[in-house]
Length: 237
Image (cartoon, rainbow, N blue to C red; front, side, top):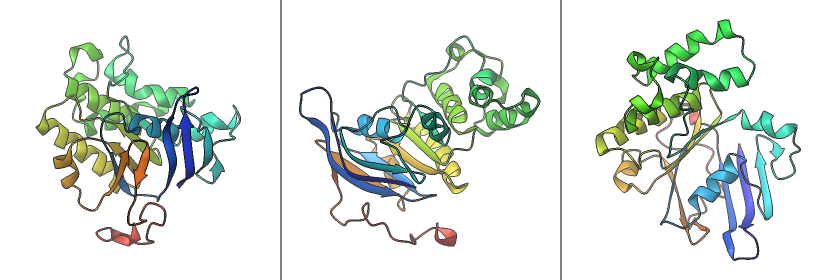
């Protein structure tokens, strides 16, 4: 699904933020991305959701060269990727319903085909009662659930989440992780950045990607050469 080979990224003339990063993401797998502050996690995620181009190296996504994509090809590839930001990035003047519906409308889905999926998705994250509310009336955990619903409404093949549990209490963090895990069981590959080691222990079969000073720690070679079948998954997922 995704392959990075010797990827490096430098802003301006400074040192590289990422250096010689290589890994492979397989379909329907769950990955934690961790490491200390300043290690380059957010930058790596930006490369994954095509908000940034590398300074060097190769990135293949869904069978395409993601480094040389032209302006017409880029939006098409991005539609296969869902993104959940730590600061939610909900549109403040839109209701919960309209925030979740936004990706479908931007994709040109007919209005009469939107209501069912949006209503189901809002119910899935447990916020049916708030469908007509504006984001500022919701708690941080509720806003994050709506951000997740918006990110997955198009059923993306890859879901990228940048510290989605960083601003919520431990109980809500577990609830959010369960939402990501449920999406993964439906076939979406998930990459979740977090500092929370207790949270990572809840999914022992997930692969942990650890960044240190812009380099990916992969002592076993698992990320470069993932096995064809992972233990703990049904059907070789």
